[in-house]
Image (cartoon, rainbow, N blue to C red; front, side, top):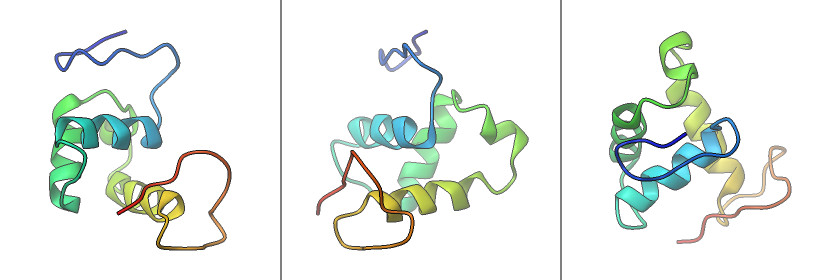
Amino acid sequence: MSNSTGISYIEKPTYRSEIIAALRILGGQGKLADIYAAIAYRNILPAIAKNPNWRAQVRKQLQSDSSDTKTIFSGKGFVLFR
């Protein structure tokens, strides 16, 4: 599956994959509102249409993947650095 930005998916999109794609579109960094806008513009994540609180899930994913925070959500893999 691919979209207008040329980023394709092998697996179903996740909040994490959409955040990564949004940050790529934004040149590697962006304000939270810009990340939301890029994710909404891409319109690939099914939760956007089904979950009115999808922005809270984006914030949760950003927090769990940030190098600035250690939370109960922290896990394996991807980490965002500033």
